[in-house]
Image (cartoon, helix red, strand yellow):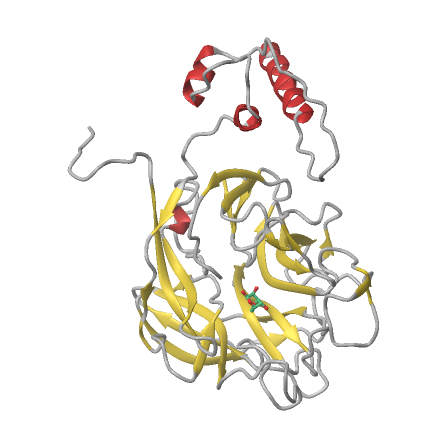
Length: 405
Ligand code: AAL
């Protein structure tokens, strides 16, 4: 144990000494790492030739945690759905919620709108600025997860003047003690590029509704950013503010440790492109009751990358699929406490906007819940449809015809 600790200290110091110097002209004191206490087995596993000459990459590899391939998966090609949820020209169906199973039927909720997107160049009072603008929340049911029946609207946009009068979209479902909760994004008109996005909640004692909406949002962006000037430009700021100073998105509530953890994506005023792409991070807000009040964790942000929230309980902690944006995109992470996430696997081609299958046995193995579920694709710039994804664990890489016992 003690030897282990000394070994890690040496590795961390060695890795730290060789931290990159990103700017031209700056010098980096080159420290040779010699006599590093690493086992022969470890060197052999990592294929490192000479312990006296460790490259920066080898030092990083030596600092990796000793985990197996239990979290590593590969996604298959996405498949179209049948019935009412197959692609329909002129209709946007996107951002599916998780699926839950009630009385033998899968239920899913999603954002639905009609007509093309005009964008921000014209009259934002009358036009549609994004495919997710002017949406209501609809739902569908299925017996097998392939053929779906659209059942109707679940949650409409609010009355003129309400916080959700422009669009309600990107919904998630949670069932707790016989009550169903939908949490979703909201926008109030006018939908300009600086508009703040919030989170609303609706509840019902049946997945078929009727739904009661919260009178106020349950989550709002941090209000410590300052726009620069009056121009409609979301990149111009005096001060950026917290990671979620502009938008709180993709809400997903998980009952956890006797409380309710609302995971969400933050967008920041003055968002930049980093060396990993868009500056997108996740946060969590915690409540004693499903309806709130939700209090943002002081540890936020709890990711430095990612896009849509895709989280599930596993082995006493919370797992999270990190996609699309940031230096740690395309990883699966896990936090023993729901807050301090570490990378467990690095994957590729993760589907977007995943709707997990909450009816699956998520404790069977780390990624069991990702065996199949829902996602969306862009059929074109105007219209999106819901699709089905699948994944499999990969533990060996074999040529065609080769069999291993
Ligand atoms: C999605 C989500 C949110 C955004 C938009 C619709 O991928 O992150 O829902 O607002 O795109």
